[in-house]
Length: 403
Image 1: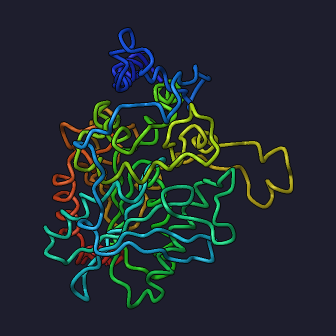
Image 2 (image 1 turned 135 degrees about the vertical axis):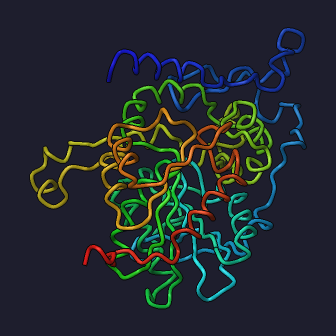
């Protein structure tokens, strides 16, 4: 990585939004007994505990950031048992209104849930007049997805990219057991979900599912791998938790983590959970469902398996989430769409592929990393247009001049 690019990358992260003052911090000098002080940061080095017990905090939740039910965005919210993955998936689904319709399978990024696609899903079904359905789900270790063998999640969830890919394939087979009768599928994934979707595409095709296309949202292999070392500094700015769902939503909006308050009010409640009973009084009432720090071992290729010849023989080295993403995306035997929040995130392999016309690139202005939440209407327009252009294309059939 060049010094110029590294400097630009570090400057980009230096401009990341900082944690806003928590309610009451402005009044610390006048009413120190009512102040929350600094919340402990479970995402980085230990911080000083809160000085005021949770029960004594007097700051009422802001009704402007109250949670919104997902009922108006999806037709169904259901649990789908998938014994092959030992998971009871939480699935949010709106079926297409026509037999020959298409279902867009949405996989969220790390730390989020299927509700991150709620606003976009409603826009898609409205714009396509019911021809496109949307299925979004909580992947393992996220949201309301639980293990069948033990309702309580294990202390260390296996978030290996191959495991997540198998989960997506197993879920599709559970929801649509007959590939011949199944609707055509369009795979869409944000960040980590984009890598999972790209890897799942050829596997589903091997099982004879018809894949209309694959859409990757705001993730590029080279940029992501180079940015990962700076992630720990960003995670240190995150609080350990919040005293109410409203506070969690407000934090996401005021830090520009999610720039669309309406979407945040739907999605954020799905990524926090009540603190366990018996927690210390200084513990926030709500904690992160999936602390991102805990996923760090899966970000890049892990060679620890090389020390165990048996494990290496059976499984080989564990591949990182984003390793090989660009190559796998360009080699997918279906229509390809890359949606970015900025063109500077294209790596060399993708720039060459774009010049060769191997995929469609769309840049959405005025948004952050949560592209589909920040501007769900524009995202829906892009996906519906991509679907209409490619739905009737039969891949693998040679053109007349190629016979």
